[in-house]
Image 1: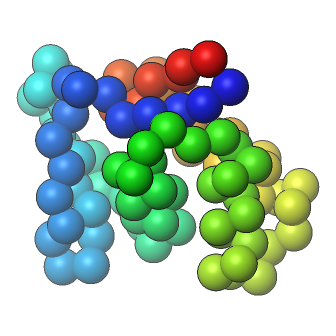
Image 2: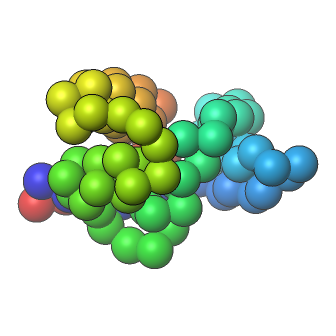
Length: 88
């Protein structure tokens, strides 16, 4: 399973954060440092949880299980807000 950015969003970097606008809802979202790393990966193209965790683990001191759990929560939130889509 891979994840990609939804066409229904616009994102911009502001003061070290990434700010995302959901077109349909007219709502802005902000990401923390790890969220920005994940968003940047998704901007490069579709990603798996494994490829995302590989990048997160190389940047931050986190074990694989914690990373996978935390990334899964963020991706599920982004999917539920229609900012990210699941592709096969």
